[in-house]
Image (cartoon, rainbow, N blue to C red; front, side, top):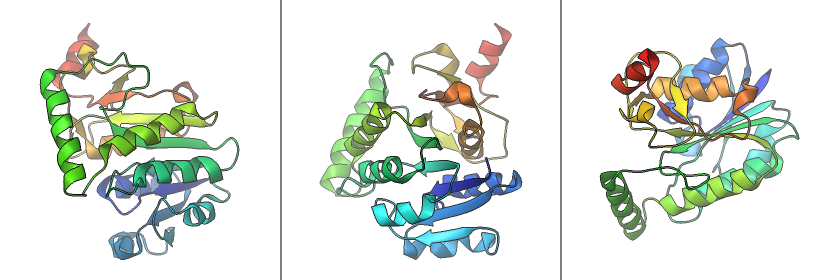
Length: 228
């Protein structure tokens, strides 16, 4: 892994991933909307920034050229299929054999075997309807984006994050193939550790074509799992 592209580099998760990639000595290319470029000022001279919408195929084509890995934040902004457009552009233009790692939430299911609480599913329905009504977010499109990733024959990983909090790193999160596993019960991960899992996945072949659901290593459920 020598050169990595971070799609959605200006967000909190994206900036954590940029920093961690640089610490590993990777050459980093970041993609973000033009108005968000100033958020990356702290990395001036240490990375290349390609400004533009992340669902623009030409922007992504230029950004991922020559990259060994692509870290993509699937953001369901607006109501114009932003997530699926971003995912498709990455799938279409990343070089053959590149490691593709995508971020999303627990609500994504690969095989329908995930088990969600009544509260989780209720809040998800509300967020989906409200987001569409106010034209702020299109959660269903994030589902479509991941469907396209799952159907591809690329070397992908879809990392499904729990609720997030800020704070110092607690180490690499633990994971399960299915939401509903007791190890995930605490439903909390440090955002910096979400980024850590994404970056580590670039070089972890056991995660190829897996959709791990993660939780913080020091949460009560993870500690209980470690004891047993």
